[in-house]
Length: 173
Image (tube, rainbow, N blue to C red; front, side, top):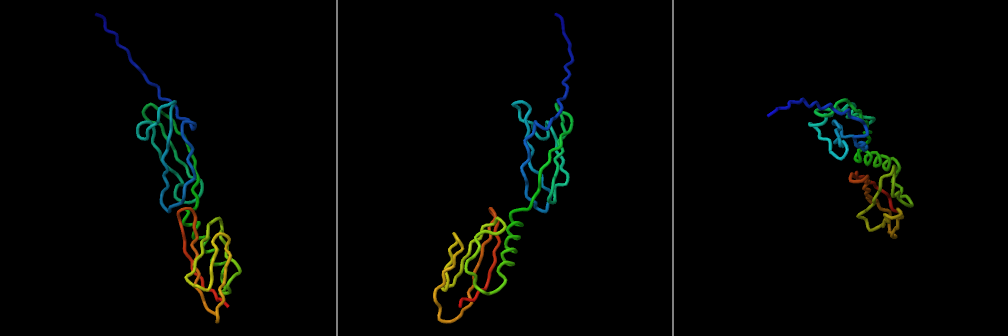
């Protein structure tokens, strides 16, 4: 019997950017933002720790961040994937609440309330029976009162799943 010996050499495949899915925009958290990296080679899923490693740069504050993907095992080379880090929904809601508070600085009851501000949704409510608020259009219905009274009006400022709360005092004549 004859024995055949051969050496098989696997040449690592170079990583390319089109092997990886683009990274969607992320929200700033105050900590390192490290989104998952997904990739494919043909129909095969690339595995973190087997086919590639990832390091991140500029990934804490708002702006353009970078995921540096390095091939290992049967893959080689580096690919840089960028993604944007923007304000979180909670920060957007807080800024919208602050804008709302700046809009209603007097105790004079407006003729209507805004239902959106800085692309945040605003829902209004009051425990007072002296006025009604239509959250669809911001219209205020006042019930006749015998004497001037101060009413508390509350606003819930909503951006996706984040919300901020504000309270206002208005005089109903």
